[in-house]
Image (cartoon, rainbow, N blue to C red; front, side):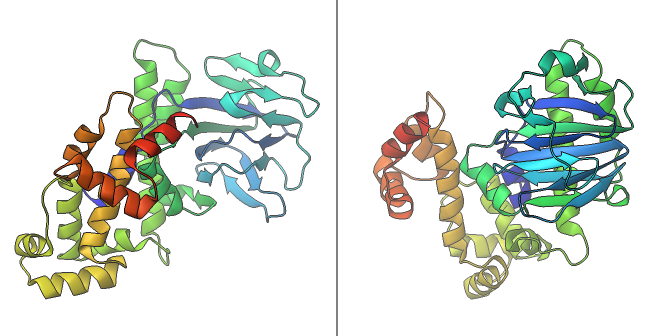
Length: 313
């Protein structure tokens, strides 16, 4: 598994909020649902996106947008238009004065908007990421990424649109997986574009030595890796691996490994039935004490304290 696969394995869609919006101009929405990441695939027409005080960005049919939350933002057919719809957490929609609009705007199976065949149509999928792995992915993305249609040459948008409009057994799982695949496609295209400011760990995968070391770490984080064992598996000396890894990734191999293990541990600790002992074993620490010492050194709290806090938020 490479680093991007590892990050995208965390924020999988599970019962994700997904619908087709179909609108007739004029229209404008203020989105304050606090979703950490929203994917918008434009099917017809166009849309402008901006935040308070920010410059509007336009997307056209075929483009895919990634909007990083949780700060509110606006989506409209024209820049600067005052919103007539407000989207709240859980997908609840209301007028600016608080009047509920759910029944008024529902147009069918997962279809919502002001006109059944509106000139502006888009698929909207909202991810909920409350874990450390998801946070690492979010930190690698800009507040708004717009990928033009020719850079996201994939049938996934059409497949997702077709599946959104029907209601069949297993539909939610199908929608979740298609949404995940589209997210992977867009994120990869964003990092691969010319002149992209891709994160160091992504660029490092092109290196035959460091990329191999990263895949080894992500494939088996519980393995008792050392610089020597990673160097042996990648066919270089310890000094060469340490130098190249630090230069390309921005931190030494063991520091990266520790950060990845503790991020995994933080997410595992959120699982209701996970024990500190089990989490320690799964992320490569021989004893709960060893995990606790590393966790507290890096995060300032013990694993048990972290879990208690996570369950109250």
